[in-house]
Length: 260
Image 1 (cartoon, rainbow, N blue to C red):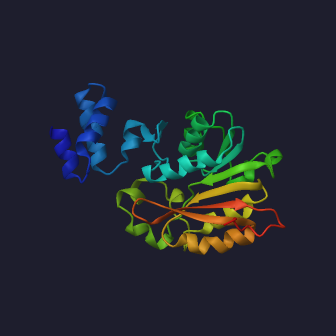
Image 2 (cartoon, rainbow, N blue to C red):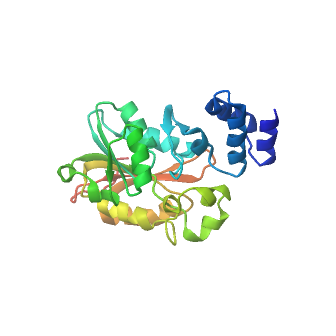
Image 3 (spheres, rainbow, N blue to C red):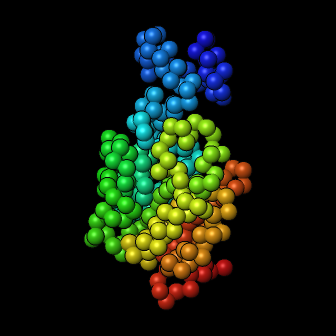
């Protein structure tokens, strides 16, 4: 198919699959299909063009200008669902399109899940996906009555070091919001704040689960310990690289050590 050849020439590694998705979005309109293919050849995210991304087993609506959920974050979302009690409370920091919150809602329908988001476009997108969104910076808009009673704080916050942004695949910084990528000089600027603010919201024994990259877990461990967390665990991806950090909120009189 000519459309597939165009995508392949533009560097799309799954050209045939993408053409199928674009054809479904065009709904039989050949002229529209050509327009969609042309948009994709510029590097525009596929989810912006089709309006949807698959994440775990959820179909997530994604509007242009909103960070596209990555399949690499699916393990984090599934782990978050495991940590959330059936009737528990969870806060999804930087919910974006609401993908992780959607997985939590699907896996734990009896739990109370809220997403917080500072970007108005992303907040509106998550609401379209059925997520209860509180707009503000980190815990700024979270319900005060939840302090000390939350079971899970989870988040895919920006963690790419500023100096590494130019080395990302060219399409990512060209199209997707920089605010969802740039984590400051070492990538941990917002994540440190999230750790330091999370402890007062979590109950003793509650969990924090944050996506990270590279050597960031090593730098983040002492931050977690000083903030009142213990039992720090690092999850690896399929290539054996650190992908997320998980920790338990400990009572002030506890050492935080796990039993052997």
